[in-house]
Each structure stands twice: as structure tokens, then as C-alpha cells.
Image (cartoon, rainbow, N blue to C red; front, side):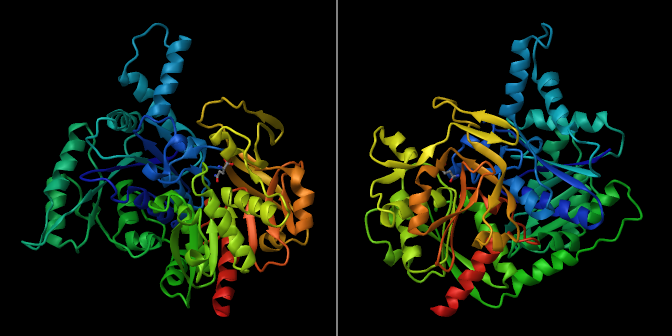
Length: 547
Ligand code: GLN
């Protein structure tokens, strides 16, 4: 039966709760325990699938096809444990389940209330898979005191009582602001935040205090005394140069030891941190650098492409170089020459995206990379743009485009080289969609198998001809144009097992030009860089030697 660690936050948002949870997960693994991490989000969206990446950052997709919060990406990158649908839940999802049950009559005429009906539903969620791991780490989104968060706090309070004494602990993240005028760290906001937690019946066992300055012993004692925690359980979280320092940094501050003490686990198994030392070394001692342009639409908010940025960093680590990412707005050259914006980069990446805005610029970026022999990685929409570019400029289909844009414009402006997929095979069943389906959850989502062509560049990079990667899209390249495009030199080097859906294209004779319909960035880890990103950065390093 799993032990539960509930992670909450106070004082301000964006303290790095997700990172602290992920790092703690990695440290518990380093001590030989198995872990699973979960996120409970108080917002009312049923899932983040329909939320703008501008507002909420990227949507992270799991193998089993859930559209989840980007924190699940952190969890996977630090622990390597593939997240599942049942690792992420929102108030919206909980309420919609409760209301469905109410309509079905499952509550037998009872009055439906937040306590116990909503809280019970949250507790049921927490229990899923409790027999599978040693530790279940559950992070509550938002900060204590938020109106939306209350049912979650109440549910975890009850949950810890339902379980045996000592089976659940609470870890709370706060901020120690520094007042430059008096040269002091202030503990009052932390005290208030803990009071707020205590007022709803939760007494934290561990306090993780974000601070820009070292926490003096005296302040640590004061926090311990006023917040009713042990002194060793007041753990400092200092700013880091790289997120991948977090496991070692938290270990130095004694977080994992404090957690094991709180559960009374002794003797604590010694940690094996060799992997994290290697990660640390690769991050901090690069032997060179490459410059990669990410040509996208949401370039203002880097969180919109979080996993891609991380996967590029991992690719750099694999080659012992630092990857300097520059965000280039595709709309800038929708109608002009792309060259002035793209010259000087060692590689170009066009990421996923939705809608027509910026797509002409992305098509030009693919053309620039093809013509100038610059390494190009097109992901999802980035692959579709590369195919349209090939169709228009090499295969003689000057009106090539995507139904996604025609649909928006309401006409037949384009020859639909990329079309709206309505029916496809997943495992051993067929999935069907209607054009007027809801927007949420109607994409080809989650892990699908692809067969790679023997002798292709991708087969060589992956070292195998069968792969499984995660998808999130509605549109597909039409195999109707395959022969024409292949004759022009664009090889369809990866296909769905039934041969109907193009998964990968690559230009023959180009040093490195690959488009993939899936999202390889979602599976990359600092200790296991994704082969496509590792090889893409290797090609960028070669390019940097040429210029
Ligand atoms: N908009 C495209 C589609 O739905 C690409 C999606 C993506 O890049 N994730 O097919």
C-alpha cells in the first residue's frame, strides 16, 4: 500500500511545486523506492486540452491519450515513469463525473454536496493504483486559500484520516521574501500560509521555503517553532541555474531524509545519485554550443513549447554542447523573404501548432532549411508544413495546403495535401469522428506504433524499425500524394502499421531533414535523451563546424 505525500503551496504561485515534487520523486527512486506522481488542478476546465498554451503552457499528452498539465512532463522527465490518464484531474473533471452520476440517479435521491460527494470523488481518484507503488506524490495546483482549491484540501485532509496513522504526510512550499532595506528574510508570510492550512485541518510535516538568500539558522528555528514543524523539516529551496540541479540541490538540503524521517523509515536506504551527477556534469560543462531557431506562433510564452525546449537541452547533453534556443515568430515573414530571419542558425525546428496564422512563414522556414542544407526537424504541424512545401515547390502542386486552413477560410483555396482525418485504427479498434464533434478530446491522441523503412535515416537513428510515439492532431498527410512526393525526393520513411497514415518524412540527399507527425519531445529525458533530438543536435554541431 502506497505512502502518500501531499504537496501544497502558499504565499504566491509559481514557486516550483511541480519541480519540487518531481525532484523528490527522483530522490525517492534513487533510494530504491517506486513512485507515481499526480496533479490535482482546481480549475473548472475538464482538461487542459482546450486551454490556450498562451495562458496555460503546453498540453502534455500521455501514452494512454490524456491531455494533461505540463507538470506531468516534469514528473516524467525526472522519474522516467510514464504518466497515465489517472495521474491528472481537475475540478471540472470531478464535477462533471459527480453531475453525470447525479443525472443517472446513482445517488438515490440524496442532496448532492461538496462534502461528501465531491470530496469522495477526489478520494476515489487518489486511491487509483495505490497498491502499485511505494510512494504516491500528489500535488495540489494553486495556493492554499484559493476558493477553488478548498474541496481538494478538504479531500486530502479526510484521506489522511481514512488511512492508517503515518501513511500520509503533507509538504508545503512557501516563499521567504528578502527585504533589502533591513537585509532580512521575512518569515511572516510563511507563518500565515501555514496558519491558513491549519485552519482547514492540515498540519504540514515538511516546509520547503523558496529563498533568494541563504536561510540563517535562527530563521530556520523560528519557522520551525512558529509553524509547528521539526527544524530539520524546514528545507531551503534556492534558485537554480538549471532545473536538472534540483534533485542534487534538494538532497543537499535534506529533503529526502526529512521525508523518510516523517514516515519513520529507518534506517533510510542510501541514495544512488550517480545518474544525477552525470546529468549535472553534462549541463554545467558543455564543450561548445549550437544555435537552434524554433519557428513558431506562441513564441512569447516559452512554456507553450516546454517539452521541446527540454528535449533540445537533452539533445545538447547527449552531445556535450549547450543548445542556445532562439524563438523566431513565423508571422514576421509570412509575406517576406525568410532568409534575413533564419540565417546564422545551426538548425531549424518547426514545432506543432493549430490554425492558419503563421503557417506561410513556417512553410518558408522548411524551404529555407531544405535549400540551404540546414538541419530541420518538423514536429506535427512542422511536418505538415514541410510536406506542403515539398508539394508546392518541388512536386509541382502549387496550390497545396491543409484542410485545417481551408476549413477556417470556408473555401477551397488549397489542394488538400493535408486532410481532416475522420476514422482511424487504434490498436485493434476503429476510432471515428464527426466534423461537428466537441473540440475537447477529439484528436488522434496518445501512443501509436509506426513502422520505419529499412535503410532510412530514421531507422538508423532509432536503431529499430518499430517505434511508439505520442500523437495530438486532427489532420494527416494524404497518402494520395505519396508517389508524387516520393518521386520528388521526399521519402515516407515511417508509416502507421496499416500503411494508411504517414508518420515520418525525410528528404533524400539532405544532411538532416526530418518531419514527424508525432511529438518525440514528450518522451525525452535528461538521463535518456530522445534519439531524434540527440541526432538533430549532432547534425547542428556538424553544421556549426561548417559555418
Ligand atoms: N493542427 C495540426 C493538426 O491538428 C497539427 C497539430 C499539432 O501540431 N499538434 O493536425
